[in-house]
Length: 156
Image 1: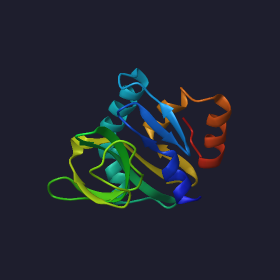
Image 2: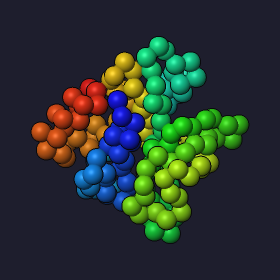
Image 3: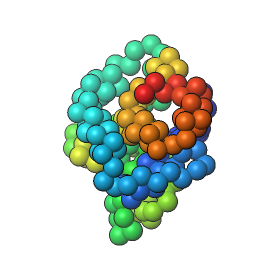
Image 4: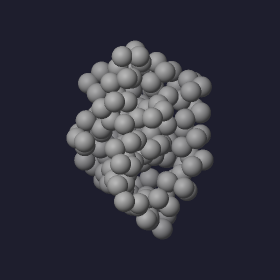
């Protein structure tokens, strides 16, 4: 599975612009499905971190989605790799920004648990987590959703 294809697929921005592959998908800030996805991700974060600490066979591509805010607005980025610290987390931005100017793809950032809006990993070719991506599928054409499910193992 190509890491760059997965990372390009998995960007959601809080200011209503989501990047799916090379195409932007507009999602309203108050979108109920997206809000529910973030709540689900935050509620299951401890379980994810336990799996990350002791990955089962066939598990890889562990990542967190993190909200970054600057004077231009807010944007959510996949952070990969990442590690937990005594005071929070550090990791590497894995997407190009569209809105914020305070970070770039490849930058190392420090963040708190409250900044995490999603998590994900791949287990034997199947996506686990990535709740915000699944929420975006509801606003995408069925043909594209089918393609992402088949090519990237989404089961949502």
